[in-house]
Length: 313
Image 1 (cartoon, rainbow, N blue to C red):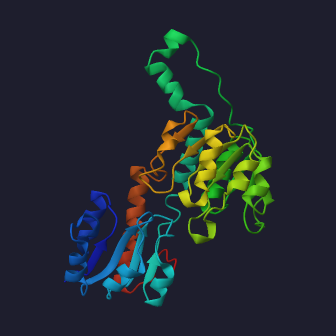
Image 2: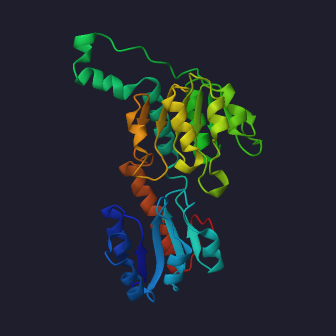
Image 3: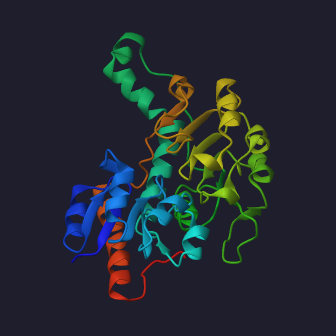
C-alpha cells in the first residue's frame, strides 16, 4: 500500500498528480467533514503536506498518530507548531532558496509600482484621462534612494543585490550585525526608519517577529517614504500602517501580505497610494514547480529513510 498523505492546503494539479504516484493522497482542504476524514485514515496517513499560510497545529498531529513528516510548500513555516512536532518525533521541512529570487523580484516590482504609480498610470491611459486631462501627475524615482531592509536573510540579501543595481545606499536591521554584509546596520527597524526612503520588510514570520515593524518604526519614517512588505502580515503592526496611510504620513506602500488573509482590512482598497498583491510573491509557474518538487523530495526522502533535503526540525 502507498503511504497516506494529508494535503492540508490547496496545491497545483501538477503537484497532486506527482504526489499520487507515490502516496495515497487525501485532500483535507476539500473535505466537507474533516474530522471524519481524519478518523478514517488516522492509521495510514504518514505525512502532511501543508502551506505556509495554512500550517499544522498540535491537534492535527494528535489526530494522525502515524505522521512522520510535515512538509511545507513555502519558505515560511511559522504556522506549523514546530515544538509540538519535535515533541512527537515529527520532522518538519520547507522549500527555501527556490523562491528567493522570485520574492525579491516581487519586492522590487511592488516598490517600482508604488513609486511610479504604475497601476494609476495604466488606468490613466485606459479610462481616457490621458486624452482628456493630459499628462498624469509626476511620480518619484527609485534609483538612488536609500533603502532599509528589515531582515537580511536569503530574500533580504537578494533584495539588496537588486538595490545595488539601482545604485541605492543600503541599510538593514537585524538583532546582530552580520560580518559578511557590507551595509549599514541598525539594531531595530525603528532605529533605521529615519534614515531611509524605502522600508522593505523581508523578515521571517512567527512569534519572534510579530509587530517587529511597530508604530515607532512607522512613525519614524520620513513623509516621502515608501513601505513594502513581502514577509508576513504579522511582521508589520497593521493598525499603525493603516493610520499612517490614512493620514498620508508616508508617501506610499506596496503590500503582498496582510493580517487575516484573504479577508484583508477593506480600508487598504480605498487608498490610491497603495499597491496590493494577493500574497503572490512566489507565484510564478517556474517557482511553484520548483517548490512542489522540493516538497516532494522531502516527503519521499522521509519515506525512504534518506536524509531530508531541507529540514527545519
